[in-house]
Length: 122
Image 1 (cartoon, rainbow, N blue to C red):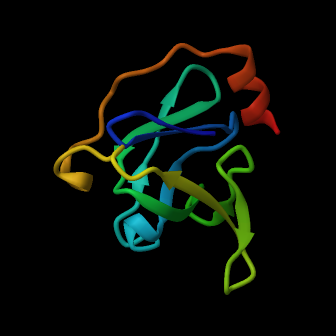
Image 2 (image 1 turned 90 degrees about the vertical axis):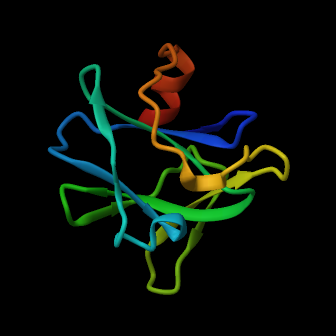
Image 3 (image 1 turned 90 degrees about the horizontal axis):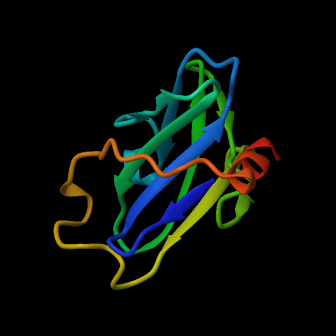
């Protein structure tokens, strides 16, 4: 699941209890050349918060250094040119704060909800 705050920070969360590692890759990470490692939080949850510039972005999770996994609880999914499913995240104009993607990831965590658990399990 992806939640965008007013400053354009995107919080990516996924429930993968058996994963050893999860990385975020997308057009904003040069498709893996600058991947972002998610942190394991609570049993089975992986989480990261990063700034994103305004616009529409494609991404997926790279699980255990080889499995690409789309996030069906994002703002949409579409088939990539290589036949892989990619997720879509949209950041509205004016949501991205000054500096765009130059800020370091935050360690802030939002409380887990029943809806979040349900969406991440889908």
